[in-house]
Length: 97
Image (cartoon, rainbow, N blue to C red; front, side, top):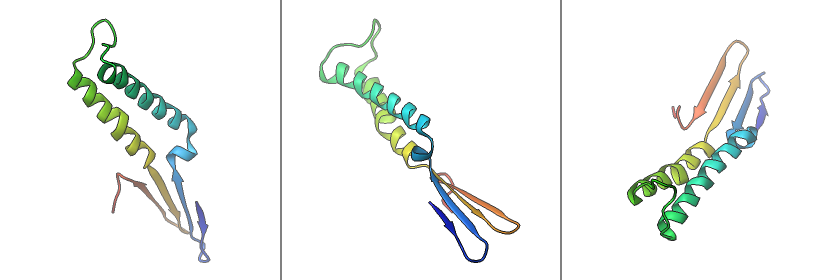
């Protein structure tokens, strides 16, 4: 979203998931893989691989890479404000001020 103010100020917000489709593809790939491993090992009860992980590890990986990781990555955004002699930026989710 781009906003041009009358005083020569320029403000833009970039949503990382919309602006960078490769990032979205990678995040969705990791998320789908973690959900698939969870579904096969926990729901269907069939161990994944020759040396399968314990169930609590699969739960932990699904929670971190299947839920938290996509929420964090898809909520990232970069706000940029350009003035005559200044440049302000805010990387939302990490720079809250």
